[in-house]
Length: 352
Image 1 (cartoon, rainbow, N blue to C red):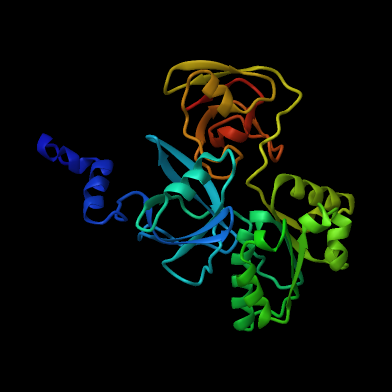
Image 2: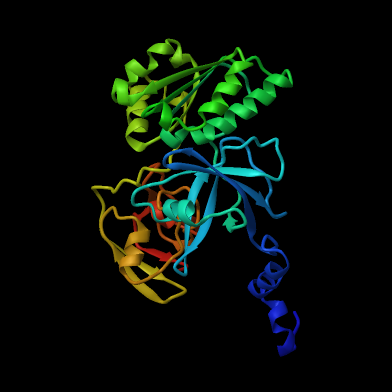
């Protein structure tokens, strides 16, 4: 390390990043920074952004998502969005953002993000990716849930062109009406010269909210297909229940952003010792650690609050937790946990 006080800034990664940004806003030693190079209105409440990331970007697999961090009123907020672009096209990413009425970040992105703006990204993540084997596929989406589906379709088309597969693919998409249909042109163009791709659209404004049986009437062999599902939480819950009733949940893959983790109705209050801050707080029975820590005056980092983005990863030194999404229980020793979806099943010691 450089010991001279005059050279102290050169020991500080943040200071170096600030200096690099003066030369080029995308440059950084430690962060994936991306410049907005385009924006397009997809629907009345949905924008698509084109981003050019710096060299710290490692690429992605079709179907994965990325965390985007925005500084709003001096506070950094992180949210997760699916990548909707073709993974075979290097150096350019697209994120498609639907404005939410109470969405702090989605509203900021719509109102403030312009060509030339710089945003911070995380690494691509997620296992909502295509299997290596072929076979018939069903893609089920509603609303902005079509965003990862477009990337999956690009990847499937590349496989077909390479002669790797002749897969039979059906995309069933639910939206309010034709004006609310995200990627309508892109999907239409894909289907025009791809006979193995069939598109079914359900407009809820004229047909009402679809029951699973009605929605799937156009795909009578759906139970034999590997199925990818993404959309609003109520839509996904209906499909999950339908698959469970028929005993085919092993064929269903999900990408979930909108559902909050459940709260367990059983369990006991637990004491949590914080090694770094030397604080102690108590969780209520079945409560996630993140809101309990915030209630105690602690400020752990967080992003999505539903167990997706990993921003709230925390080192657990001891004790047992249960994942509120999967129901999985941890071991009793050292490991990393997500505060937003972990509830104590014993007293804990955390690195907070």
